[in-house]
Image (cartoon, rainbow over all chains, first blue to last red; front, side):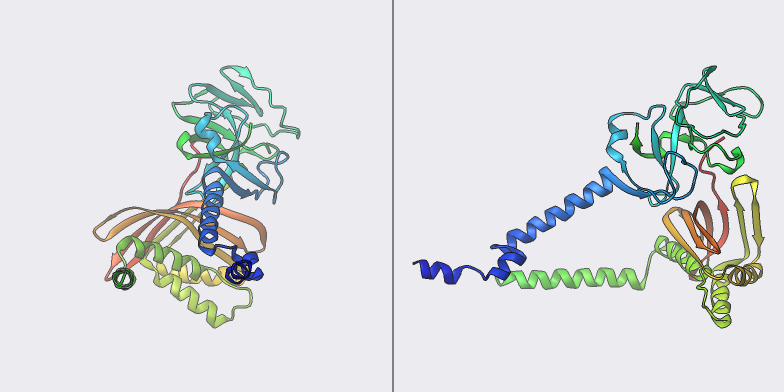
Length: 177
Length: 165
């Protein structure tokens, strides 16, 4: 009886390669691939930072993971670093949330004002350029679903930095709060 | 049980006919995407490419544009670039190949917004690497294409602002 069982069991190399039951192993592999693809497509999106607009918080070439579920569960808050769709999801911009919908925002000589009060930005640890926004000296009221988003590198002139107001539906995921 | 191979064969045959038909007679949105991809490939040059290769690619790029082709690019810092006409495209591509050496363009996330008769509009992200720069450059664009004969040709390309000010 024992001899019969031995002869029916698969060779050791097959057990190592595809398990005792190849069909079960195949479906397990399919499930694993689906889970991994699902996680990296819809939950944690791997990204590589290029450029200097988020220095010194993130460096050029740094690899990070964008949490896509996080924005579904919690709306964007001030200070969040979010991924913004350029066209689709292949290339994203990374920026920090500065102004939220319904707020009045202004920038005077580089200092951000929210509803008339100066915003403390401890993440800016380099000298900032004297940005001004709006250029007429007033304030800009952010409409519903509009966010003011700026990178952390404000050493450069404002014209050379990609920043401004963006629709909430262009936000893809959160890096950290 | 005998029906299973027959069913599989019919499924493969129907699938093959479907994809074969789509390949032989692609619909307009597929052709629009292909035109944009072909243009990006024709605008990309390898550093070791010979003059004949460059000339062929520049001619291919120009052939993908209409006579009245117009491109308008607005970059950071208020830098503006524009180009008019198919002939100018050909000469600009040759100049770029000479100046840049190696340059690679890719078109990502193409979305065909609408197709009405012989006109269509598509949004896409253009990426550029090379040309003496270590940086990876990306910019969203909108293209308008016209169907001339059986081919979709690029009539107008304009850069799109990501942020509102």
